[in-house]
Image (cartoon, rainbow, N blue to C red; front, side):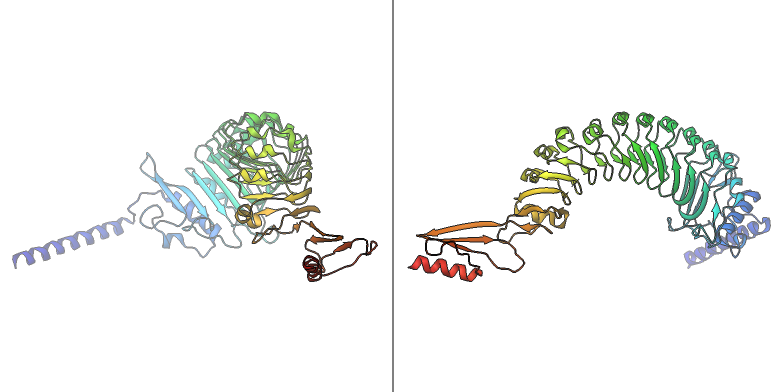
Length: 474
C-alpha cells in the first residue's frame, strides 16, 4: 500500500514539473532551440516563394531548427550559441522535401541565409514559356564563405546564363546544373573553385569552347558537360586534372583530335566523347588510353582500323564502344587478350572478313555488337556462347555473313543460315542437295549423267530423297 502511494506521489510531482516547464516556455514565447528572429523570417519567406503563399511557417513551424523542423531544411548551431539554416532542399529528389508550386520563383531573400552550405532545387521551374525563371547573376558572393554544394536539377524553366559570380564560391565542392534551360558559354570564373570535386553541366544549351583554365581544378573528380552544343577543340590542359575519375563530353560538336595529354589521367575510369566530330584515326586516339576502364568513342568520324592497336595493353578495359566511327579492315584475334572486357560494340562500320571464334575466349564478355558491317564467312561460335549472349549478340545487316546450322542451336537474330552443298554419287547418277533457308522452302537438285544430257530438274526435298533411295536399292 505504501509503495502504491509513493508511486502515485512521484507521478504527481512529474506532471507538476512538466506543467511548470510548459508555462515557462509559453510565458517567454521562446522555443527550445535558440534561433534569431531575422533568420526565422528569412527562411519562412524563402519557403513561401517556393511553395506558395498558402504556406504559414510561423504557425506550422514555430521552431524550424528545433522541435518543429521544416521538411528539407537543416540547421547547425554556431559559436555564438544561435542556430542557423545550413541546408535547403526542394523537389522530389529527397523524400522529406517540399514540392515547389507551379509559379515558383528564385527568391532574392535566399542570399540572406549567410550560413547556407547546401542548396538543392529540383523540378521547381518547369515551364520555359509559362513561367521562365532567370538564374540570378549577382549576390552569389554572399555565399563565398559558406556554400559547399549547389544543385539545380531538372528545371527546364530555369533560363539565362551561368553567372560569373559563381566563381566567388570558394568553398564549393559540388556544382550540379543538370537538365535546365541554361544558355551561353561556360564561364572561365569556374576555374576559381579550387575545391571543386564535381562539375556537372549536362543537358543544357551551352555553347562555345571548354575553357583552358579548367585544367587548374586539381581536385576535380567528375566533369560532365554532355548533351550541350559545345564546339571547338578540347584543350590540352585537361590533361592536368590528375584526380579526374569521369570525363563525359558526349553529344556536343567538339572537333579536332583528342589531346594526347589525356594519357596523363591515370585515375580516369570513364571517358565518353561519343556523338561529336572528332578525327585523327583510332590507333592515334587510343595510343595513350589503354588504362581506361570504360571507353566510349562512338559516332565520331575517327576512321582507322583495329589492327593498328595493341589490344594486349588494354587489360583493364571493361567497356569499349567503337560503333559508327568509320572503321575498316578486319577484327583482329588479338582482341581476345582484353580479358576483362564486358561490352564490345563494333557496329555500323566498314569492317570486313570473318568474325573470329577467338572472341569466345573473352569469358567476361556479356555484349557483342558487330551488326551493320561488311563481314563475311561463317559464324562458328558454340551453342553455349549463343545461349549466354542471347539478343546481346548482334550480327545482322552483314549481307555475306551466315551461321552454321546445328541441332537445337540458339539462332543469332537477323543472320541467315549458311548454305551447305552435299553431293552423293552412285554409278552414273549424281544427287546434289543444297541446304539452306530459302523463301519457297524448296531444295534445288541437279541430276547429271549420260542419260540426261545436262537436263536440269527442280525437286522438293522429298523427291530428292526418293531418287537417292531408289538408286541405292537398285
